[in-house]
Length: 268
Image 1 (cartoon, rainbow, N blue to C red):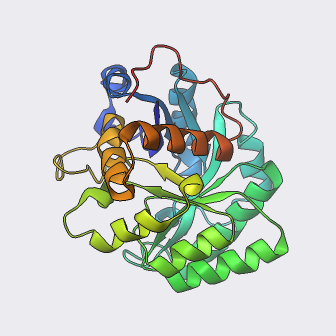
Image 2: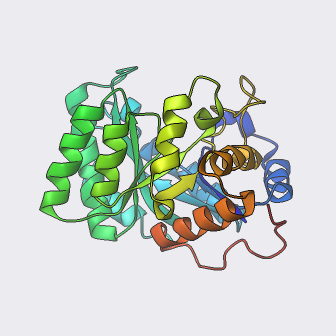
């Protein structure tokens, strides 16, 4: 079984076809999906999708693009929403200096708030980091010094130094379809050398469809394509990558029942 550890099933791209989408994921060997929150104020839709589908779990949090609009949401509110049985992660939160859609101080403030929520709940923080390696590493080191928290660097496309900082601090690293792109040689080299027990896979659907679907709408079924490239890069079988990344997922996302999604899933 594979797990799509990060997708956005609440996005309008999937309206009206989630049943078919999830059926295709099962056919591709993807047994579980985590639909990730980007607006806490729109969390109700995310929660409803997770409640409707047994194989779908969710997170609660504010994307850095929305950090300005949702500035000041207290830790206590995030923690309270995270008590729902289908909420298995905090975030996504982080720093995005590529688009800079929110003030950088608001992004950093939001990230630190979400870190505290991860500490209090024990749920993993889903970290978004783009073109902000130095500041992200500094915040992670500072916050980890205040008290440990579980986390992963999602849709990893940063440099080797941030990857190794994450590993040093106990974080996991998740790879998306970017890993399959022709110009991602440096990223594939990072994926090759990371510890196997820290690797996850994801789609970030509807974005970043892997080769050969690049440029089209992404969906959870395509997790298998990224996993196949990760297996090739690391010199192991697709079955080994599926087993390893799924084991890693359950170790990090402790709130997900250990046998969730196993029944009736085609082995990848």
